[in-house]
Length: 265
Length: 267
Image (tube, rainbow over all chains, first blue to last red):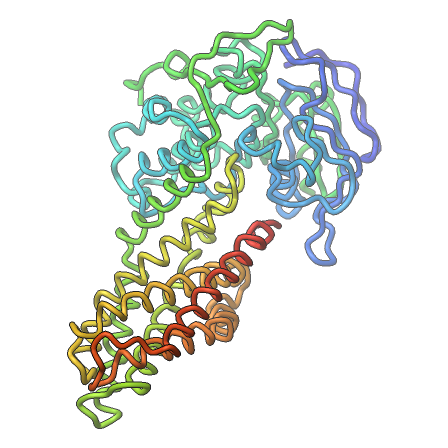
């Protein structure tokens, strides 16, 4: 997906120099982690994780359940405080400058972050108001995720796939510079995956391949995935987590699906 | 599915008015759709609207609070073996009942946000976090107002000796001042309790001691209003003192809630 050949397998504590893909900014890295530690009580959910990701690139995080993928995404979203290490997201140091990250990040997690009793339109309008986005954007996204005809139905009456499409619309409503996607294709059938591709994929509205508009070109993604083939297709950089530690950190072109599978054994 | 518009054509990325990003070559693309971080009152409006919509759809708080209050008055009616009460007794029954009914609403105040990810969504938005305190407190005030619209007439009908229409105009001020205190303390405690596993237990355990002064002040201020032989136009100086105490307590806890609320939302 991007220029290959600079990075190799490195100790987890060493930031990875990653080549700048075509169309990406060559300024401050979008993400820079050095020795990130996050604990839940006594247990370390993330231990000494270090990496660097340039704007416009995609980091795909693999790892078994409980490896720390979701925790990493929540730290990057400024929802969880790092307990040690230097964490910079979009140039802002966390947790001290978390205010500078808000509104620039889109998080698509396991929960849709939508209210079940409200309709899809009411939910999206609520989020649009919180982000200072106009109502026309809501209508536009309802069309993109093909929910316009179900927009006035309560979320609780929709299928899981439809809820996931609504959640994708919610996460991308404000056209965030950094997308944090936790298993984003869960519950989506192939047709639905195609629908959300321009919003969260690399080929349509996001990434390096000539999406519509400047903001899209600058968007950076961190994706957690359990799908080696699908994940590697999206990735510029691959992070494999095991017990909170970076067991694998390499450029995507240098990683084979078998190495990803090995993480789960 | 195939009939949907081509997404890549339908989608227009947003641009940021304050600091438009530049392309790697340093060129600035023309803005297409503007985005402004909302002010605090716009945020309060959005949150309050959402809050009331969710309550209207679920009817989880206000009907339960109202039913609890009316049922309690019925129980008192029979348990006291009295047709009517007045003075201190009436004020005590009224305010203890309203307090426990309010606890039901306080316990539910943040549950939808916690269970459905509303907290995370709010924390990701570029908004003033105090907006949530204000919106939740206003929502709780609205729930208390509806509760009292039902509970106070029921109290007048089931227990109160003096006719309600004589006492109500003066009682309104006490109700408003007490409600503000309950809303400020209730919102603060609910935000703290909802993040714990024992939220249903912790909420009342934290709120009740903090609300005791509100109940004392409200009961003492309303007691002279609930007597049978009330002198028209006469203002009891002790009543004024208790009203001032209530107002001061509201102010103090309003400021405390404002000062610490941000920290309650933090990880």
